[in-house]
Image (cartoon, rainbow over all chains, first blue to last red):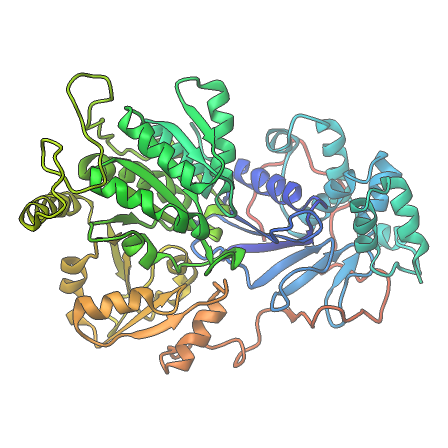
Length: 205
Length: 398
């Protein structure tokens, strides 16, 4: 098989590194060869943040992903020349002509688990599902940081268990305009997460 | 240790520790800062390992020169602009004969340049950055495992050659994580070759040309030449033990690609079309090794992240013209390599530039273009509703 490639596109501070590290660690625990490259602006927080992840049963030579199998887009800051077979995105980040799905991960993190940060783990769960990564609880336990491990596992499983029907039921008909980016901008400006969610949602339309 | 994800910068630190390093001094700069940060964390639990965050790169490199003379295997890590500031002290280290290791995680220069983008533009600086004539040892790994392995070799070469040895890396290699088992990498460690300070006798550490008794020899050309040639010959012999390189891919091709560090990794899909020569020891140049291989090939292409720094070296080595594919502005990608090959008419049949053949999947439009359709698109195929099974076995990904 050829290496499967995933790109996580976001803004510094959104959790791109957490999602990338967790997925890479999980795949390593499962015995895969993994390459994970982080690329980010020097401004770090608030700047472009990308994770390029490849995995295979064989060693991987070229780890620079130019055509991804799956892109997880939490914000649209990635390289313009990147192409993707399938895009998982927070609200309103799918581009014309792209095949993919939009899910309000941050909102779900708050609604289902009480904190926006768990939205990252829900997104990871969805990403693992789309990539057909068949993991166990033991794999997850070994791969995840010990802090909040029960909540993280629950959030990953929640994301993994989503299907087209449940996603359709969750996503509002009137999707947000750059919801995730607006949310991140407000959080970076010092607004409390819950309030930032409300403000980002209020900008919809 | 078992297999685990290790970052390139972390592997350099672990290699240094394995080689017996006990002193790090540095100043943070992207994309090398993880080495400094992790060295500071390591020092907390290991009092035998000393750490200094200095006020700048000049202080850092002078601190490790002093640390080495005092008895500690010493190293620092920086990137292009910091490496420029270190050149005077590196020359001092060559003059005095100080074993030390300087890690340069290259980014795009000159000056501040592109701080988080990978470059390979410090090859000349790693050889000729300081003043005068001296023999530089420079290694450039291309995997995380090699970051560990060649850092150990760098410390060994520093001891044997009694000189500051440079490890080149780059923003991609430094920030790359790979699954490795570093315990599987066995490299013998060369012990310290110079006595520590205060171990008896008198030693002179002067940058000025001197006689062995310490008297100035600033006007004695013969003495300068004697000392210089003695040092050069000693380092030439040491270099023979560190002639690291790779020769592979399709050796029956009529074209030889020369690529190193990150470019060798990115160019891998071209393996069926070309032979590959990868210098791991960048300096001193691998004249004999490349000279033995090159005559078999009609054409030679140097793919590198600079505007021909190594291509110029190869032309001087072989006294023949080589083709060039410069990857500039941090654009280290197969697409950029293919475009470069296409420009010089060397794109292999069956390969193509992105312009000729659409990339896999849907091409993303320019940023800022809004999606007209809202809501959810159906996934590519139905997904199981059930969460991860506790009893499921690991299986291959489709």
